[in-house]
Length: 102
Length: 242
Image (tube, rainbow over all chains, first blue to last red; front, side):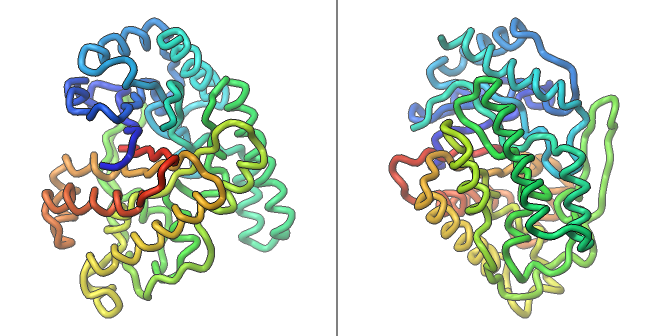
């Protein structure tokens, strides 16, 4: 796999454990989709930091990044969340990333 | 390599007025020029939303697309008749609110002509976005094997005798698209490949095996095609969304 950034969906129990992150080669970054785009429930920054710490047991933080789990609107119909929730979730991605990596 | 810690996958919620304008232009009620001004405004708002959140990588929110992979079928002739069901069929596991649901593969789905690119898939998207932001502009392209569902053993054989011969043309179109995006200055291109995850579902896997590819072949040859699309462009970062 040539891609350098692997964007992986990790927003619920069905996504499975972080164990496969052990297999990520040294020259790649795993972007973890920890923030759901399926509904308006807003994750807390503490929740996201805890999940990243857990992922950090399998892959170094330098090889990790954060994103929403998927697009907010895979088709024109859009997902079941409000524009306000979408905005809060985008802010959360940036704030949680700053808290962990800066 | 782009090492930003805060990333996004691409699409954003479409404003209702964009949805309405899309219907109006399709019905001939507004001009192409009027529609493009509305579409541009939707992209502008998507850019502002991401910049205000503090993201260093921004997309155009996929405001110009019907769905994340529709740029291919809109820009290229030969895919035959299809509706949005072409992209949505399958067995889906929803949360408490949505529940599980299934949609059958449309019977009329199938490539009927040799693929012919009428225009670039995402050059307009990238060029406009590049002019609207000083952040890194990200563009997404669909993984070639995602279109395997468009090959039909009954309907497509005359023009493409095998699934492989059809997908080879899809790969070529995407390779040319990547080269064009790089020429236009793209530094971050993401390949969307959500179909790999669906292979764990026995019903989905059975359909693809019926298309002539075993699971091993999917993983081996599918990724080989993704790599071919990414080509060799030092200085450009590729993302792969599973």
